[in-house]
Length: 437
Image (cartoon, rainbow, N blue to C red; front, top):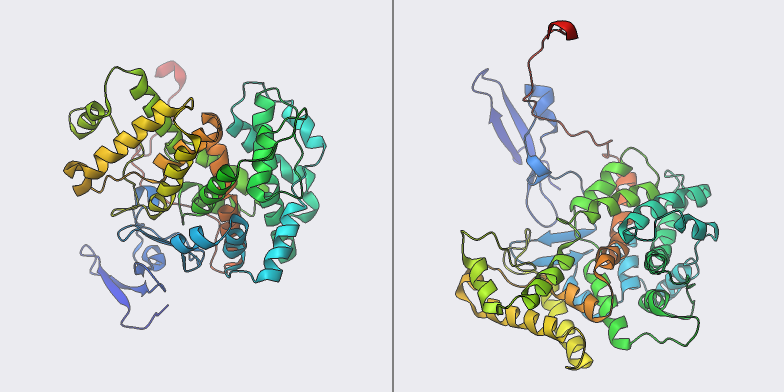
């Protein structure tokens, strides 16, 4: 980044005549950023940016996102190439290390993750403390946070070796924690992981296998799940990632920081979009109206109805992940055949997609189907219940969270998070005795 004398902007305070030169930081890729750290020190001002939508809270080399051009890159590698050629665990290595592994490194990494998928046996009793109808995400928050009580010997955040051990433990154990949350809620016996299965295969095995019969994960499901996890592994400084960084900035242990990220992701405005897509499709199927009726409602500004799974807050031209996952969605539905229990939902989804991609209203506004539209349909087709959608999102995003946490701990410019505020409350006043109020 260049910080020469020319790379500055000048801010003038008209009320005092004071001025300050603020450095412009040039990233390796993306939008130039004004360094405002001297603003309060020199002029006594804060900046006001609700949601931090125009504020860079950190330096990061993990993921690059350009919403205007529809670009997503992990460590400089286009998501399109990673989705086509890579595996989820290879992407995990990339996000943690910054470089793709060679064959030996990937084999070693895969072995480490595979051999750490078991949970401490006492954690089984931890699950029994939840109500049977507890939401799986509530179980995830509690159980992941509790990991620090079981693996407390390796949480010295200043020790690089401890940090990587914690990262490996989280990536390895998250599928087991996730699958067990489903098993517990459904009164099913906990299934232990198997070392001869891949990451995605192991999760499906722990979710759906029964001790009374053999279970072999469907190869279509395995491929689709691995792709979904690659596409959701990281997404720059989103709400949950920022939560992990903010929590970690107080030097909280990595398990607590990731638990905070799961809690943030649980919010329907963040991690629940694909679940909302399915609920919308169910409502449409249960009504006596066709897809065009709901398309027309979505186009009516006076109507509060929203077409879930279309458009994106960040991507303004297209969601690159949606383009990748679309074909997988279609292939999976084709493989299921027409005589499946969700066929009417799938038909409705495909009809909405067809109309929206051809309708000038949607095309001109870039209201294309996004990754949540397709991922929800895929997960439903795999037999995964709605309340597990965000759990799988958490499982996928764990590597992104822990990568950002690790990067933040090593950053010499990192400080404990302390956002400022624009106070608009009462002016100073004196206490009045309760008898005279």
